Image (cartoon, rainbow, N blue to C red):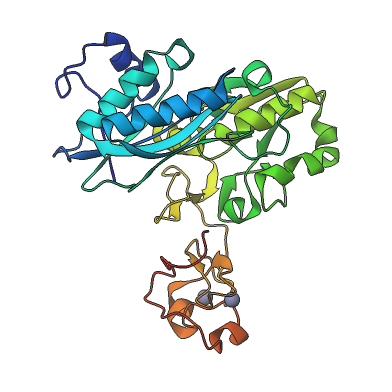
Length: 337
Ligand SMILES: [Zn+2]
Ligand SMILES: [Zn+2]
């Protein structure tokens, strides 16, 4: 996937504000050499949608009318989606949402694609756009303040400041901010159970972060509603931090939920923090166990990958339904990550 520069000499926008929105939020995007025919869009916004159920139905109708594909969640607390289509379809889609005052300032993360990345369109009405099991948390009213990456970088080492990782264990084990507090959770919705462990930081300045921002925005709202005084979140998440600052002090790699599995963030003082599950050597190479009934997600070095045929244990290596290891440790028909 190549990133797309949104400059008016490529796309003649009739809406200046649209370009400004991109320019403001994506100042570091560079133009790729060749335009690809499709785009994928990634976006979310916490905003009160009173008529969320009706909105979801209308939105689906609109998407079908322009032929765009996508997986879009709508709740009273906002919208969270990924969409895919031709360049023209994607522009129509972004214009449509930006014309609605509730989404006028919504930021789209845009990637160019050779082929559409999605084949179907779903618009689903849900209780929450990110599953936290606490629909009462008012993110649009209470979320912490945004910190731009440069400011986050300056503040994170200040006295009385703690950095809080709100991602799952499988993600922070392969990479996280140096000295960040991380919780042993398998799902974001398990975070509230760990509130007692976070109590000691109630009067500190808390800088929360996640991959792209959608989870920490909700986590910070939850903390503020539970008596925390000064809570911020990293605008654009780890990914934007890497792009804008060079990623200093992010140890290891950033876990992502696509076929890349991890991406590099830190080009200033990079390190590895995760170890091969089989031999203990430093490795950020994440695989799924070749035994489909296990499908355990873990780090494994290249050498062990071949030696143990992509399995996490000897019993998995002996498993009759073991999938063929091709060096990637990624199985399309396997269970989701
Ligand atoms: Zn190994
Ligand atoms: Zn296994």
